[in-house]
Length: 170
Image (cartoon, rainbow, N blue to C red; front, side, top):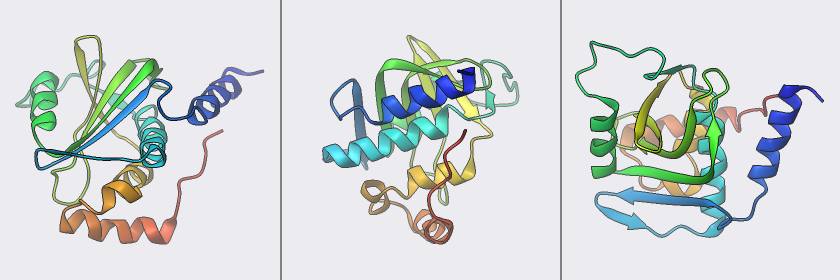
């Protein structure tokens, strides 16, 4: 079996794990935690994993000296505002850079999209970029998240409704 086939199988096996077996999902909106059902947590966790493992650029590999905020500062700012937080008991690996991720924070305060996309394993915070836009829409437009989106974000979910779910990667 090829490495790609094994990675795909591992993703499918993780995606079929029942909620509560090592994945914790929190949706925080304007300072309050939103209660999520097991199905909603599972949908969000699967979509966040698919998005984050495929991001093309990370601050660990290509630090941007022009960025005003460090990834750690971005992490704290994202956690202070409306955001998704997903914790995996088994760290994920990004496909391109091999960065380990056990915690993921995705900000929900950008006017039209989600972001920043940040991960942490231990104390090292990594910012991610060049993430798949279709998969970002899938996270943003998940049923449990959609009802709390800003007007511009909700408007962009119309695109997602038209194009549908992202295809599985081989």
